[in-house]
View 1 (cartoon, chains in turn red, purple):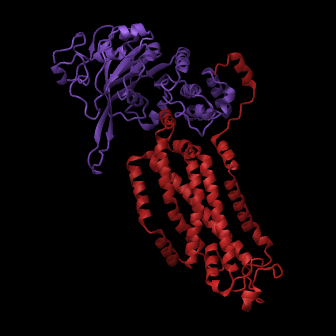
View 2 (view 1 turned 90 degrees about the horizontal axis):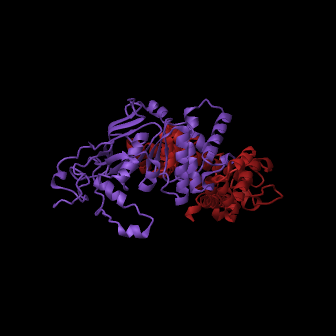
View 3 (view 1 turned 90 degrees about the vertical axis):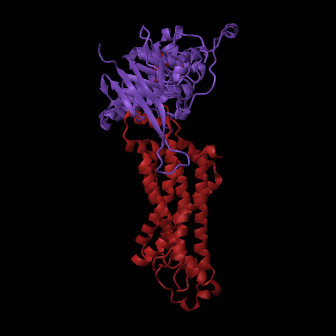
Amino acid sequence: MFATKSVADDLAGAAPIKGRSLWADARARFLRNRAAVAGLIVLLLVAAFALIGPFIAPWNNEDIDWNVLGNVAQGGRPSLETGHWFGTDALGRDLFARTVQGTQISLLVGIVGALISVIVGTLYGAIAGYFGGRIDNVMMRIVDVLMSIPYMFVLILLLVVFGRSLLMLFIGIGLISWLDMARIARGQTLTLKGKAYIEAAVATGVRPFTIILRHIIPNLLGVVIVYATLLVPSMIIYESFISFLGLGVQEPLTSWGALINDGASEMNNGTLWMLGWPLFFFVITLFGFFFVGDGLRDALDPKDR
Amino acid sequence: MSAPLLETRDLSVTFKVARQGGWPWSPPRELQAVKQASLRLEPGRTLGLVGESGSGKSSLARAIVGTVPVSDGRVLWRGEDIVSMDTAAQRAHGRHVQMVFQDPLDALNPRMTVGQIVAEPLRTHFPDLSKEQVRAKVGQMMERVGLLPALINRYPHEFSGGQCQRIGIARALITDPELVVCDEPVSALDVSVQAQVVNLLQELQREMGLALLFIAHDLSVVRHISHRIAVMYLGRIVEVATASELIANPRHPYTKALIASVPIPSPKAERARHRPVLEGELPSPMSPPSGCVFRTRCPIARADCADATPAVMNIGNDHLVSCPYHSSTEASPL
């Protein structure tokens, strides 16, 4: 601070010093959190399973192994010799290939749902909170109205009326997923709005939308990311529940919920692997997301600990 | 005489406060933050604005900068009304008037580097500048406020309070403004750093010909930097005079009390002097007293003070005071 001119001149020629951004600090804190890193590794492995699985599976997910069809409880056991590493389902289809496909669909649903909520919810909430007044009132009452509709009911109706398809599932989940996020983003925006740097930008003459994009959204992002990582598993659970009811994705597509449903109905026939494998992936993924979410929260909000 | 750089004429700022527990349609209460404030500021001069907390200093400053809506009156910039300008013109006007804030860390976006923060007004008003030009200008400005240009990629949380205030000043000066509104720029800083920042502001004022509107509740700081001082109480400007005149010859009873409250750094002198201590609290700006708003705490208040708002009197030497009994010193029998 008291650097004399000559020192300043010496340093002026030097390369600018790289600052440590808050993001870099948060990354360092996250990487020190063992549970969170373990969760992240599990998630990466599950993602790798979903991406690489189709290329290493010895069986196609739609082909029926006629050799085991009448005798699934014995011939359909998980074994390395038959190539059914996870066993087969009740129809003699390879469970490994089916689980890979279920993982793809479930992760896709979870990530698409969270993405819609991050993009739509954050922008919506930031706009409502920043402009305030009547705009805020109208926008948030719309959210209240949408929230008061029982979403499961709407989702089921959508799937029944427009037919069961992946697209409808995305639309249904997208409709509900952003509501909570909009509220969270609005609340955070209201606290940010009082900051002097927002006022400085207004006084300088920066346009409102530039302020939202440059000053508000980057400061919201910490909270939003944490909430989004916790939202992915809840989206997966929604989808699983819908599929468990038999309304989700349509055969031959499948998802974790559908596989768990199939496995659960065969529980009494001594073929527990049909339930066990999808359940295992379902549970470790949820745990992975929860640990990563917790780790992100601790990393991004060091004050809250 | 040419128009002054900045002039406010009967400027009022009113906030609407929703009634607690009222119906959504019940009319909000009105909070008069500033009422009929008239000020003049010449180019290159400093106007100090003092008053206790809640006296409306910040609201007046924000109305001038344009972040708070003006409910009545006019803000003239070189004789041209800012309030009636359209939004685009007001935004463009932001180039000429910049602001320095009280809490230096709160005024800097924690997710942006110092370079980005200082460059923001440039990018807003001169979008045609190339990256190199912006970078060079930011570097020059950082050097000018006493920061090493090599720190351009650092983040605000890596700086001390005084340094953050310098960053804030650099951001305010990058567009070559003619007026900088300083809202208590030193109240959140250590005393030693306060002096540095005040001296920096004075130095920059001389070099760049800036006009300053300097707000503080600390009269000793304002006296040091200002050419003229305006005293505010409950949203009204009660006295305006040149700095030396106001300190040596305060006329309004509130100004007298304010000056008497400045401690003298000598225990003996401090004990010996007579201090008219103000009693009571600042009345609520939601329901200000009738007539002269100061009468509830005024040592020389009379019965007729409650009747009408006192007119502003020029008692010579460009010394304005809004108290008809400013020459009487004795308490009335009331």
